[in-house]
Length: 272
Image 1 (cartoon, rainbow, N blue to C red):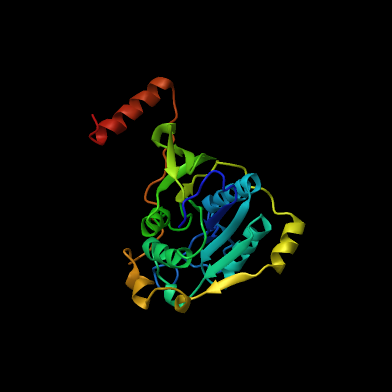
Image 2: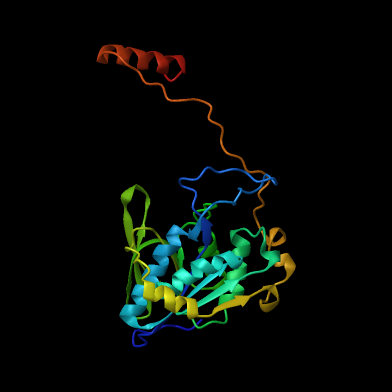
């Protein structure tokens, strides 16, 4: 990793993206293994938080110059997400794929990304703050630690100074803080930092002609024990859809009757 200076206006940016199922309006079922969801019939797309990270990377490139490389860990299906990145303004795309990556948690994914990224020219790495499928927020910070560079999470705004990124971080309770992070750095982006652009027909056509570089375990400085379940901190033992145990009760009547009923419910549950 090189130190970035203000006079070096071109930025080499890497965006880590994930190909995830859209489950907001889908009926989720557990597959036969009991450890994953049934993916048949589900629509896959770029992770929502990564979508904002990609847009921010393209905007930075348009303002300061440089290149944007989109990188993902996934199967052939993930090519559609990488094509979307290319259509939206990414210059290069890399897919890290191997059957031995199956079962990798956020820690193992970070190791895979680290092995691929550590030899690339890079001034800034952007990721989404959250993975929409498993809810993990660990890959970005772990990647930064492995690269031995600074990181900041939940980013809502990015500006650049002399060798630093000045960023706004979202905190609890609607608060934000402003911090300076030395470059190169890893930033995990929150939704709302920008408005992702639509993919143009011309962009799609150009993206279809661009190469997606494919790398497997043999191309990385890793062993089988570094990836998959063997190289993970977290292992899913069982997955299930939470049962619906109770339903909402609507209380009707006059204000006095409703207040009396609520008081009885609270008292019956030992809350007063």
